Length: 487
Ligand SMILES: NC(=O)C1=CN([C@@H]2O[C@H](COP(=O)(O)OP(=O)(O)OC[C@H]3O[C@@H](n4cnc5c(N)ncnc54)[C@H](OP(=O)(O)O)[C@@H]3O)[C@@H](O)[C@H]2O)C=CC1
Ligand SMILES: O=C(O)CCCC(=O)O
Figure 1 (cartoon, helix red, strand yellow):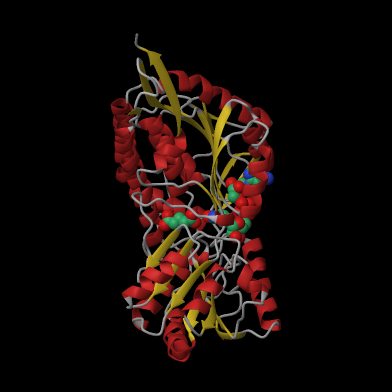
Figure 2 (spheres, rainbow, N blue to C red; figure 1 turned 180 degrees about the vertical axis):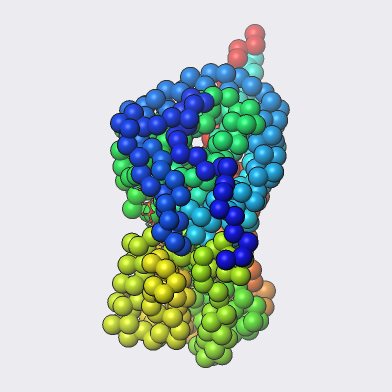
């Protein structure tokens, strides 16, 4: 294969607690495998409650000094971390592709996004401001100071193993908080590598800690129930998000939850069809469909359905599937065997309910055990199960609509509310439809809008809170009101 390096000095086989690279207290480990080949890349510690308690204690200890630094001092350390990430971009991207499977181009873009979040929040560290309030009675000085929440727990998923760490840890550190991270079982290596670079950049011991584990349950429960932890920032499935929220209720932690999505992608009959097809290709197959903002329901005006399908199926047939380390490959494997089983079941069930497979529709074991062909399904309707499930794989599911009201009604018929997309050249329609869509983020004539400057997050069962933008740091701050009698 072309362009493949196999050695990577950023592969780390330890957890990180209080500035030390450590094994689990029970001595157990688990294997991290390349989903494209099944090869074992590393063995990392399988940590549990005891290790999590140690990490929380270390973060608590480190909090005292970290929060005393000025915003400018924290900014300077984050800037050094950013520099380390940029200097190691090729190796970080390769590591990401090896543990997660995405194409090397997507991995590089993700690491750049991690760097951008660190850079953005380094500057936000210097802009934490409070307010002097109008006096509630004469002879008073009243103000609001913003203080760090305290020790933060971050539980992250496998689909963006690098940027998920940066978008949680960077704002937490900028705000003056310390962190315990629990990365996903399948992909802890990018997290460990980023923290290795943070340590190199001079972030003090205990400020960032990483607990690796083969199943989130035990570590997660300790993070949620331990009273020292004041905030949980979680990205993952809605089911696990709800469980964690209930586990956090005894200690009433502050919560940020980035959960599942069921994004509609609406194409009106006045849209530029080629642009809309390119949009579907970009956002449906982003990370091979394993992204919470992927177009999950592609809703096409009935007049343009046939033309749209013919263009989309041509585009899908040009995708190059394989080991993401090969530069020719556009899309890699799914994350693991259970993802293949889930996707296969969705397709089988949809076919049994009347769906038509235009292209794909099966696994590709000839490429590797975790590969599934990019698939286009038509003849779908809102009463089928596929309409309500977060597909999280390379299946483009097509529905049709008759008029604007019908499009909005279909789009909003879901408990989720993360991202939505619409393609139209009618500006009145843009204004009326975007107002009606019950979503935290809407892309109009563009499929890609996520960056460090954007308030990323959802409404309804897609979660609570926002990551990124100038709003993002507020999630890690508390308001402290002070009233001083001045006479
Ligand atoms: N919004 C998003 O970006 C994501 C959505 N999803 C959705 O969820 C589906 C399932 O994916 P999956 O990886 O299982 O997602 P999960 O929600 O199960 O996993 C996300 C994170 O939560 C941890 N976790 C899992 N169970 C618990 C628990 N009981 N207590 C504490 N932490 C826990 C996981 O750890 P561990 O890996 O160690 O179990 C991982 O770090 C996907 O098919 C997709 O629909 C998934 C990932 C991201
Ligand atoms: O939370 C996700 O699954 C989306 C992250 C998208 C991005 O960073 O581009």
